[in-house]
Image (cartoon, rainbow, N blue to C red; front, side):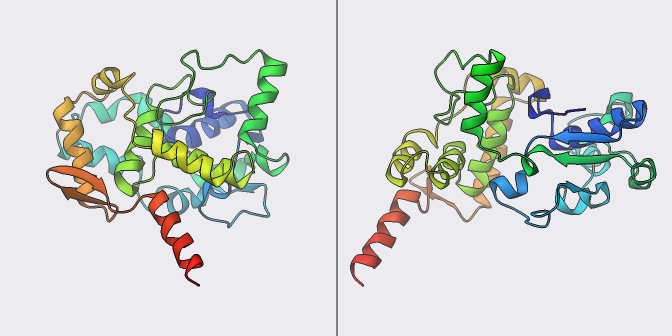
Length: 261
């Protein structure tokens, strides 16, 4: 059984939990996910030499002690939805089965990237050649330069834009850093791409996204500004949010220090 990112990316919680629910229902013992994101994109290296992880560690490793029930509780408190909303039967699919139940049934989730080197660019070439994969008909994905990511996910761009608000690190930065490490582009090329696309707003599905969340545009920007005001990456300059430091400025300062000995 394979559960890929392309299922629609409703949330990390849903993606992690759904496959286990289905495996329990049909007595499937082995589940394959794509890549180990912690290793591929920066994070915990706990499972560097292991092909799988246990569900008992999800709360600590991915949700930092939070849970679907906790998120639902805060949603009710803030008036985002009612108590009846959180009683809907579909909410169960976002909650992982009890770890003891999974361990007893011996279900295991393995990362495909443990068995085959995970290189998005090479995966892209393979799927075009062997599976009839179609490229982004607009030339590239918003906020970055790649032309094969998030083609079936209207909400994904806002996941990355929120990261930009929190950390000053946009989607293009994330893609460029990976491609630089893999020698697909040079550092200078990566910096040029970040300058061009990192602060781009994902506008294509913005009105759909607002309707999907049931919020106004004003509420959206209120949240964005809340994150920026509590981040050490941003500062307000003459009524406009500016990054305190940019990647090209940091690179220039490092080169200057090296030059000056």
